[in-house]
Image (tube, rainbow, N blue to C red):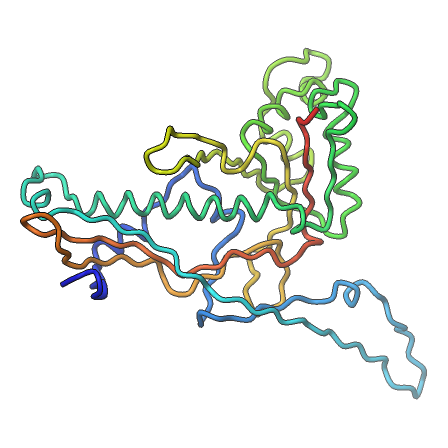
Length: 311
């Protein structure tokens, strides 16, 4: 067989690809996967004004009851193909140690890179201020926001949250920003009382104080250099923002329940193999792929704070 032939699905490799999970990735937590029945799908949003405008509820003795109507707006999107492959020489397979399977190793490595690529896509979605209904640039006028000893940061955050139409239940931030937040003097004093202003506050204290269900910490690093160049590692989630979003675990592409972001997934992650010409003994090409589309659909369900450290 050649590169022009299709991959043959492999049950064992597919099981590895589906089960493989890099615990340092948060994409599936902040932009959960939702199955869709077709590659091209519709999703629904509703007019928030309809749910917050109170009609006349008074009913006369012989009058008709006032009727209301809830409308939805349909959007359309298509799942995109994402995949990678690796070529494993047959000689490597024949000479592999008893407890080592080169094909399984390739499947795991490809799956890891697939997850990292998805992590970057979701991070870019969450870092984009245009996806949010509320955007505050905080580090202006030479002020480093998180280093301002005169600002009660948690109270400041809570006042911003109070102005949102929908209360957020998720916080997403890079590791560096979390460390700065946990070490802010006002935050430490709020946790310790008057017993000191140094150290690191537990994440749970910040979460409980702000009424957040879950804090998601972006820790992934990615190499932006091209192959052959000196590696250049950067934080996939950046290092200078915080997002507060509302996530509904019951939301789907067609039930009208609003959530800040979701990932439409058509079918399962798959893995396959095919014989290819390589070297004297030939080789097996291993593939891992999936059909997904990451979407942000409800701007008013999110707030982003940027330039927290920018002087």
